[in-house]
Length: 80
Image (cartoon, rainbow, N blue to C red; front, side, top):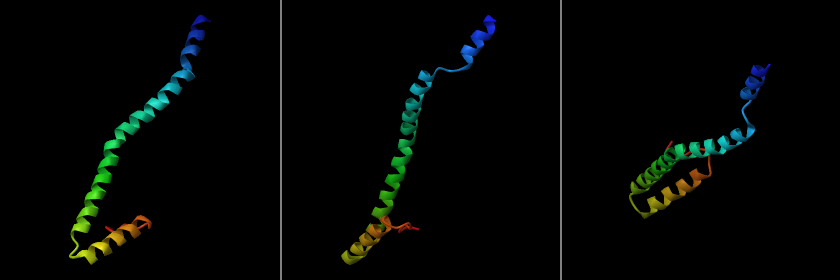
């Protein structure tokens, strides 16, 4: 009888421990994904700068800047 009491107590994990682990897991995942998110942002910035640097004159730069602004609000990108 005593043996079944101890196994039932060990079978159910305490809810306090689970509540502590969830925020820690979220923080860990956020720290893990940060370099990937930053590298994606930096890659986009390099692509935009290269796209603007390829302009022939000021009017071309302005046209490309407008295209980038329009693409930011649409589903299609300028580079695709």
